Image (cartoon, rainbow over all chains, first blue to last red; front, side):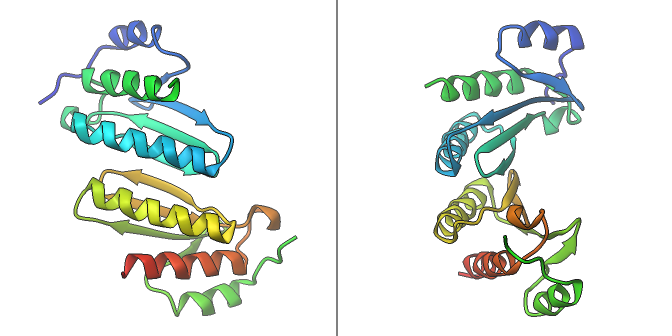
Length: 96
Length: 96
């Protein structure tokens, strides 16, 4: 079972990321795009990364917005290192 | 502006579809798949259809589940013929 991070560990890690929040025991961020196609392209890139990391986000899409929520099922739905790692990857895909 | 359908029109149309509900002024259905890859493939197919119909669903994905919610922005967020048409297309993609 993955070990949940403390609130302090999460806050400290989020200070290195842009615009992520810790809410409802999840790491959350909303991304905006020019249009639906760009949003879908982003989702697809996240999908490949998620498969590689064997860790999957909640993805919510409406037209040009993509909301991501990250938590770890094996840690009682809390935030773990797996979520931080995936958040960093998603951030880097967004800034590509 | 697109014309909202009445509750009766919606109920009648949904009786021809499998497992869709009318809730919160939206048409809703949750789909399940073997795994994340199949869920993502379904989302991608829906995306192409949505672009073609110039009408976009709300898509919520966690691992092997995909929740769809349909409403029409130009009709005050109510259900219109556009949503029924897209629901039918999504249903047919799912049954392919």
